[in-house]
Image (cartoon, rainbow, N blue to C red; front, top):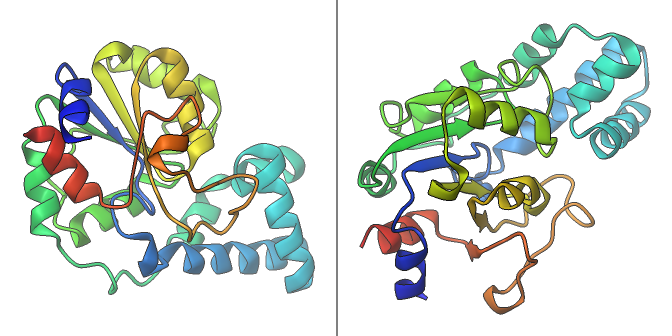
Length: 232
């Protein structure tokens, strides 16, 4: 595994990372707070009961890629107040991880965050993790024109705008379906395994290394260790 991973990433010079549940451990369960704040926002915005708001939240996630996109498409929501509200969370559970910072710093080339969240949220999380100076680009949902992963368009634009050669790029994600298009473009793909995603099930599955879907090249539940291995 170690030799194969190192060989597979030898020519990679563009390192693209998801943020939530990827650059911090999913067991910290930060996303559940974001999830609850989404429900509360929808309940107030649409004058719904909490139960009805939550059901609509999950329906829009499934049908539109993100709850935000569903609210924009179906109700003309202004996205910025929504993003500010749902990301106003307590980050006290996050702590710096020097080993991860060192492993990221050893990767040759450019490091990029690509997230369905906001840039402000990404910067706050990176700072709390001690990773703030390690990423040259943050491509957030606003920069992606509010088009969420796994849609192909925003990743295609990211590749074009940043001059990325997909054959020399790698994508790290905690949701397997978000790796389908990176794989189709020719990127190496790594699934950072978690069971804490709020929409687990048909949208996310565990896989053993010997039983990966074709669009996932590697799977790990230890991002720091995986990066240390491929850095050699």
